[in-house]
Amino acid sequence: MSLADLTAAELLDLLDRGETTSVEVTRAFLDRIEAQEQSIGAFLRVEADRALVQAAGVDAKRRGKQRVGLLAGLPVAVKDVLCDRDTLTTCASRMLENFRPPYDATVVAKLKAADAVLIGRTNMDEFAMGGSTENSAFQVSRNPWDTSRTPGGSSGGSAAAVAASMTPLAIGTDTGGSIRQPAGLCGVVGMKPTYGRVSRFGLVAFASSLDQVGPFAHTTKDAALLLEAVAGYDARDSTSINRPTPRYSQSIDEPLKGLKVGVVPEHFAAGLDPEVEVAVRQAIDVYKSLGAEIREINLPHSKYGVAAYYVIAPSEASSNLARYDGVHFGYRTEQTEMLAELASERKELLDAGDTKAADDMDTALVRMYRRTRAEGFGPEVKRRIMLGAYALSAGYYDAYYLKALKVRRLIRRDFDEAFAQVDVIAGPVTASPAFKLGEMVDDPLAMYLVDLYTVPANLAGIPGLSLPCGQTQSGLPIGLQLQAPPLEEDRLLRAARMFEQATNWNKMRPPKT
Ligand code: GLN
Image (spheres, rainbow, N blue to C red):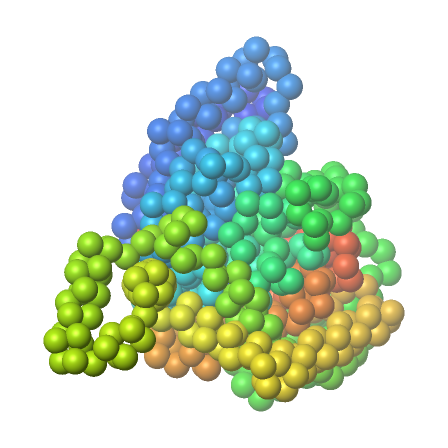
């Protein structure tokens, strides 16, 4: 057994007792990466040198009996969408292929302050748009349980890295399910906190009213630890909530008495894979056997979540991505060639005597913008920008964007009413287990529909968590989603922990590839 097979809590225990060192731990994970990464492709960059330097630094602190941070000596992988001044931040896009941010995201700064070992940067769908990592400009990631399948997305690299024990902890982001969905498909724990709980300062924005940062781990206990390290008010994020961060890792093992679990009949409608349904229903039975009260509740507007989300998220994206113009930063098209082309086209028109057409030609600047964006963005990102620009345009704004905002309010109200009756809501994360790579890349609508169960939490701003609750006959993980009212991450984690303690699903590991 290698150190890489242990959970973060177990490793921390060994480190604190001086039975191992962070350098040994880091080496164990780097070895695992060496063995597994070729078949998984979870990392865009493994930062072995920096990791070993950080690990040695933490070991020295421990030896010198200095105070160490919450994650002292534990490797953490970070989705390549959070700025880190010591490395690149590409968002898996050609547009930011060489982008080195001048500052750290608050989450990254907090990880460093917590003495984490930043082991590498994980693959994702370009700008976090997608659900399979197939929209990455650089590589696809594979599901460690079956490498012909997707690990999910957009934080697929983070989920796969944890599932394959290439890191005990990872950070992802969730705008419409991008933490919970890959966690579910890879058989690990993933959590989207309340909107505003974790700072987005230094997070490259996709859809600003929905984006949240959150943890991946093998257990809810580890996820609680990582959340505790990165959560908290930040004056540099205007949407950050000014509330103290509870000590999630301290309370995690306290079971909740008199827990009321909400079950939503709409979740079990047509389209749900029968094996997923069985596993989720069995999970609900586990809660019953633990003394929880199971109550039926309704979320009548959640079925419009995907439609509303795919208006709101692209609208915000079209505005957020306007900054990639080839001037401020990021990729810029090859200009010498472009200017030569422009000059020769102009000459051709003038030679033909068409001065009007020559005068009407796009300027060099406009051409530069257009070519930069045509070359720098992949097809899904372009699709989102077009969808969003359309939904926000004069004449369509009321019909699409405003309508979607109204639906969003109804979805939020459904949750308010539900949480007046129950403490948490339990249901599926996705309708099916991990799908095959290539299966849906040419069918954006099918890909969007995968987000059915995850987008409502983002639209409502509530926390949601995915944890393993079963396996299909063919050996693919199945996830259980729990959702709680705003700022009730503590309740959510403890409710999830109760299930985890009563079952063994979190101990499953994929075969080594
Ligand atoms: N799959 C969703 C999308 O493509 C969610 C992405 C996310 O949460 N970042 O928009």
